[in-house]
Amino acid sequence: MEPDTKVADDRLLSAVVQYGLSLSDPGVARFHENLKNWGDSWQAVTPLHLPASDRLAQVADEPSVIGDLLRLFARERASRKWEQSYRKEDNLVGDDMLAGYGFAEVIGKFGLFVSDKLRCGIGVWGPNIHYPLHRHGAEEIYAVLQGGADFQVMSQEDMEGRGGGEPPKEWRRAGEVVYVPPHATHGFTSGPEGVVVYYLWQNSGDLRERSSFS
Image (cartoon, helix red, strand yellow):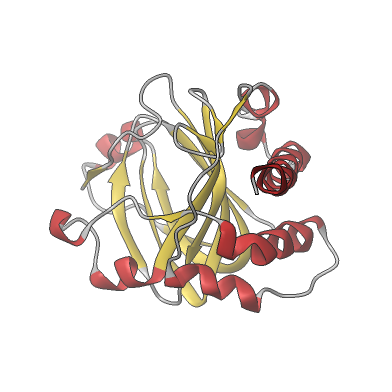
């Protein structure tokens, strides 16, 4: 089984790298070097199902690079390891989020392709899920593949200049990109269709750094 698994994983690697490099957004350009030079090690990962991944069975049949990436993950969803960063006992996110989200990592510390430079994969959130405001030292990209969400992002300096309060909400839909600077306060609430994102994360330190919540 391992050769077949490696072939499928290589397809995902090629798809996420090429998609990231195809994005002209200046925030994404900051990740291009690590996308090109993520590392060189592959590891087999045991599949793990989460209900959120089943939403990929409903992806739109659009003739675009976004559609190609979505369809590939939809076909491969049952053989992927779907994860969550939070647990119920952490009391950091709501039950709605724990019941309705998950991510599958292709490149990363525990991904299919091992990297100490970059995390890259796909994340799925069901309808009307609130991801509370949080922050971390890594910089991050959310590229919306399907659906949409009200994103909130504000740098540490701007938050201090405002004297606190919440960052404004900005609706982002498929084809749009959200850049999160290091230490920025950010979060989002998915729309009625839910939201599927391509994510990038890079950090000079721990690639599985725990977020701090506001």
